[in-house]
Image 1 (tube, rainbow, N blue to C red):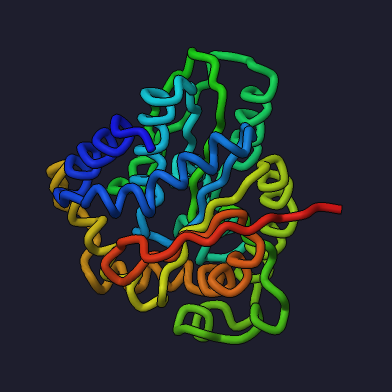
Image 2: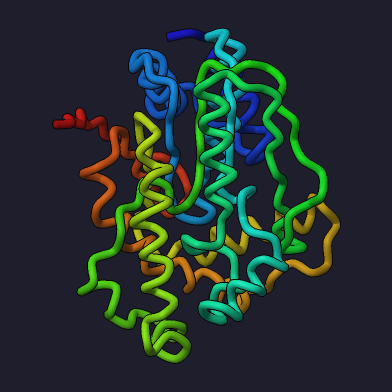
Length: 292
């Protein structure tokens, strides 16, 4: 086990979380993730998991240390940066369903642009101009992140990454007030599920390995997302961050797919990382996925 990797990860975790994780914790739960990625010899990875679970933190640590320790250049993408603009979502909400004005569900991302960027990685076509989404203003910025350096590995993180379509029996079941009150005719659910089954499935199939961060219960996500919002507000000195009530309503848009993923992804992901209520890893499960 590389001491350089352990101490590098420890330092970065302090910077990101203000918590000093033990050497044993990093050896047990973080280093195996690096070993898995390197030993797999694959080039395209998905990181999936609920809001606030730590996908961005994991991606940051992987990106920095795969470069520092393993001399691998990483193209790291976030599904969140590919959200449609506010103007596009307003148009979609008028055309399809009012709930589509809220970012999140499949159908509210620019998958065409994301697929283009995946193909650019595959064909080594640079520069790649990655969009930047400002969550506090709920809109895409005019500036882009220009990637000029050829990457060895592509990692895409996103809350619904690798999710299969939701079966009709569960799709039709009302599990919260948003579904019960605002989507009685299932137009919203049918639309996002169709998107998940088609263009999102095409995107996900381009990736060779899936890393899934599993939350122990949906009930923890509200506090995690609230903590995330406070951090964004503090970091950006922004007064328009969502309050607890707004966040509770916001995550209801994600509830169905999140719960569906909790049920099915542990059997589909190559690597499942079980996270406890304190957002710490408690177990890592490796699964050999065979394809026909």
